[in-house]
Length: 120
Length: 109
Image (cartoon, rainbow over all chains, first blue to last red; front, side):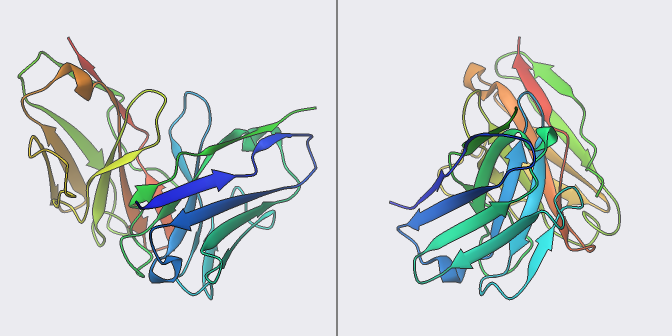
């Protein structure tokens, strides 16, 4: 069974850091570009970051550029999102999602999400 | 990064056909594929349509997608009560980002 399972969410104070993980099972992560997408409560979907299948190319939304880092460990079949200098507006459910293939342009299959709450 | 434009809401009675539009520009919908997602209350988004008009296995043929120029549409025919939820479009933008539509809330009257 193909699964993406996010973990690492929780409550964190403004200015602190958090690292999210996305463990893939039933598929070989290195065959896919990967994305992080977030959704604040009652709001729409917001793209956060994308990494190429090999991790060599990374792209970020302006709202997180310089604060968040997407990375992957294809040997461990795991995607990461390092989030630094967190702000209240980063509060959201964070989803990892895989592309259809190695091409960057598709967001296809999603995990169940992990909630990040930034609050003092 | 801007968003793709969707109507905030759409509704219909059971059995009806409704359509949801998604408007973009030449740098996103006009030059890249469009994807559609269904998000039922309390769940993660689910892929409904990929590459403009393709359905993943398991998605009923009541759902169909189309694209023309810088706009795309999702049609739901034979509307059912369990179709109620939010629907989002997405496309890659040539600025090297993913754009999502603001979402359309579908209500079955």
